[in-house]
Length: 436
Image (cartoon, rainbow, N blue to C red; front, side, top):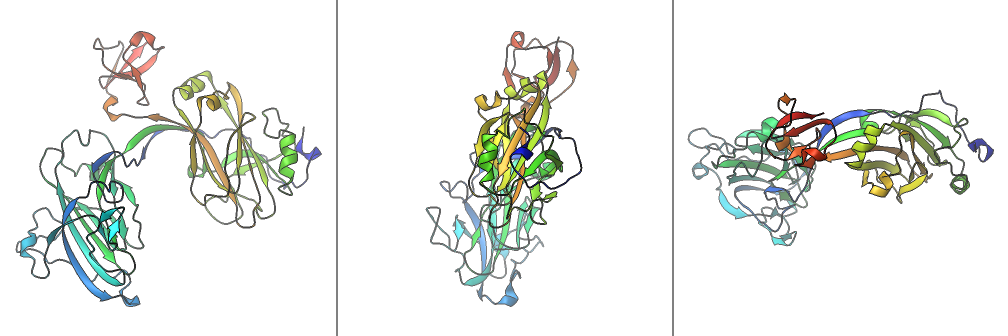
């Protein structure tokens, strides 16, 4: 039933076809605190580490000291600075280096472990750390991404790997900060059993203090986007702005979210929607006074459905407030309140994924009006675990005679039995091969 027979409140907009904006598969990285290479205080508190530290206590804080570095360890007799592997801490002219045990905090205990209290909360100061370690190739397999745990309170702060600056922070604090190293930065880490140096400096203004470091292997996946979010640009849709939140009940009784809904009187436009000049403002939405209904269409082939069934279908949504999402007429998710600029990411169940069909599909969402700001951005993607060991090499016309592990081009492990696989292109022993 057309919505105009139920409700009023449309805003005119130029017609834009409601089709999916698809993005080719891309490799993505995510932080996983379980993938420990080198423990940090924030994410692996059960494994306290040791480091040589040099501390400067600068006395009581004043506004003129904000983010101003107060002191730095002097170079050694060869001119080596404190962050270089060849630096000799025993030759420091002022102050002294000492071996201490993490966590390095102003709190007596941090995450249940006794702290080395390098500064009092009301004082300003500096901490410099030199942490050495050795690794083997098994610790960082070839091709894997590596995250640096870079918790700090306050800034400026710096982190060096084997004498090379890999990360800086100029302001504020973040005990949970992690940074994905570039390939060049990751390759600074030696895995031949020789010594590595992770050097850290953190400045303290006032209040709580914290300094940390660690290394973690990244989770990696190939992601294909079927409905993009704003990070890949605006997205086409049909939408309807209602008058009151109570109208949502009327619209739901008319099954506005059904695939067969007549959209002839819906507005055609682009999302995301927001009431404010922010990252989500593609189409203005008076969220303080109007709830909104949105429908996004996307087309799937048999090949798409087969790929999705062998992957994890993920629904992503940034919202304000109280969204309810429907896939092909069935409710798949809802939430209360809002999540600011963050995204809820939900892996759909096999039963929910089975709602997809060949041809036209609809992902619809309703969002309530609230007393303050409001926005909505959402999308669908599939994520397939990626293993760099299944790297792509040369192409052959026949399957190798060995019985190694077989992967698809997204890095998904498919077993070792060639006879069970359909025709296509696969990877085994680091090389592509074709099954005809």
